Image 1 (spheres, rainbow, N blue to C red):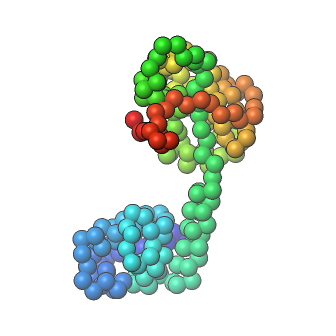
Image 2: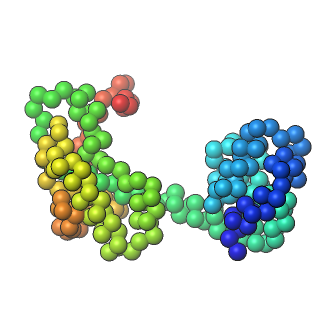
Image 3: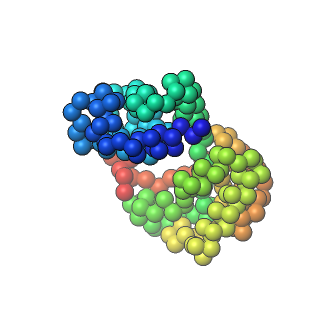
Length: 210
């Protein structure tokens, strides 16, 4: 049984305030209704407690909702345990980082201008791509990143403006390991991960966001 879908199905039979009172909130407010809607629609059932920092924890709220809707407590407990494990796994995952190598050499460019353009050298994978990435095996991950690289190169027409023409891409997929890709998305080889210099502005030792 998909517990989240079952909860959504059963919850649809109640008025929001009626269900909230069954959960243990005698005088529901609008924020309680918003939280209820969020939890019902959330595959993780709001277990991570975000973005509602209320007294009733995410786990307790989900369990109370399950009881109110007649979900078997053992099934609910098992579901919450699984959700917590998945959330922990996600928190510990290494997020792949992509760097666009142009072999840039600074000449007269002002630092603030470079800092403002730094993000162009470090494109982020979108949430959907990351979801697919974490479910893929190594070969599939390489193929996925290669496709991203090829599309990025086409979108930029091979040029990063201030940074110059794109030579290749480096995807750091683990703390000390990376893949080098040609602009056409093909893998060159697996290499040792290295840090790349970053243009940034600081004040009193703290980076200034741009």
